[in-house]
View 1 (cartoon, rainbow over the protein chains, first blue to last red):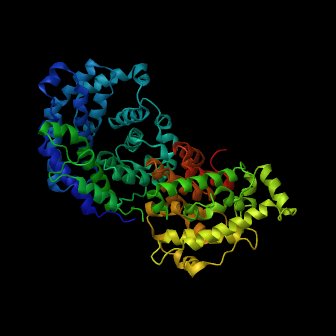
View 2 (cartoon, rainbow over the protein chains, first blue to last red; view 1 turned 90 degrees about the vertical axis):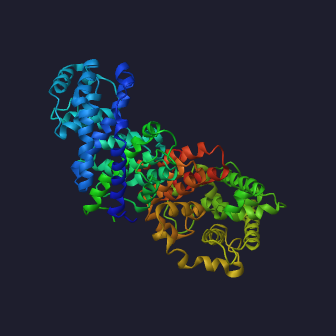
View 3 (cartoon, rainbow over the protein chains, first blue to last red; view 1 turned 30 degrees about the vertical axis):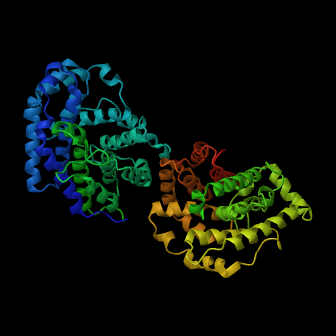
Length: 307
Length: 275
């Protein structure tokens, strides 16, 4: 298997970042969002994903100077304009004290140096309750919450090993049963376990071996289905493995799916519509493209790519 | 051949009938393993069906012979007492009875099929292998004098060359390798193609990937074919869940006779699948 050249890997992220930057206004909460509070969490999710992405870019150090500038501008925009310096998150926490969402979004921004003491105090307060640890959520999200706590310097409110054991991936079941939603459970377990690729060595060898064995089968399948959003996430998982393949054929298909302006469609071709609609449809796969590119480029430039 | 079969529904139907008959014989549901008993002798498609299924049409003989020559499989562990009894009966000299007549008739019908459908000059490698597998199976599994047809047109010899083993077994990426292995599943019967078996055994991980992909794509026939090769090897990864996988593939195929034959062979020869 041939590994994709770093230039190809890098170009995907470069173009994705350019699109995210030029479409940044569409991340904004609308007046309606703010007035009703309806859908606030849904509107905030992309902002959190944007922050995670910029954190990955800063950490992996693979961005050129132009990318670094765009990334910094996007971050400041997210913190100041979208989150009102963290006030939006603090308000949400006040509204729903046990919601993990503000912490999940704040964690990456905190690592990048942004601070909101009032939000931290509110998170601390919620964490004093037994209810915080008892709130029901998907096992892979629990793993993410523990990781977010660690990222802002708190002692995680639960045991990561137990949380992992409760996930689908933690049990390494029959790989041929993987369906669309299970595949996302797998990718997210890996993202949270490795702190969005920062610590690939947190993947236990048993799970890393399982992924190295079966990931190529899932990747090939969703590439054939042209599901670029999921393919991108699977390519991140590959880049988190001890010996990533960075499979050239997969990356070439993935790069070819990207639109000229850098947007990545969810599945098949780019959707048509007004810019807001298109943004809502493709911001996630495009964020994933930036993430996958940063991780893969970084691994390609180190010397641990599988033969 | 296999590709043509898919385009020809009447051939497909005959292939399914023959596959079902062989599977039944394997599971002990038919007294005689005789292929000739399964076939409608006057059906011109019967010979083509034999070529499509290849060596598998003689699988019941391989089982009675105790797994075939030169095998390292543990067929003894999964043979029920009925099979053991039959082996004893054969050893104690019922060779002149109906079973021997059946074997003679089967040798004849296989010879006809080989003569009727020799691989042409432009035959695919799969067709060559499948042809050679049937030649080999009739030599190895049918009692002496009833199998071992003279290889018509020398086509078998072309296929038997080591060149046929080389190349793709090492070089093919896993998706192509797994696809080809499934097309050659009949050659996984004991002792038929040792070099092929050894080459594929060295690529267990790649076949495991192919199995996963085939099930994901709901290509049950391919999955079952790959599963047969995996059933042979002792180091198939536990995480693959091959046993539940074979049962799953069989059930999900909705009664596909060729899938059922593959899974019956994995079960009867290697004890994989239903436990």
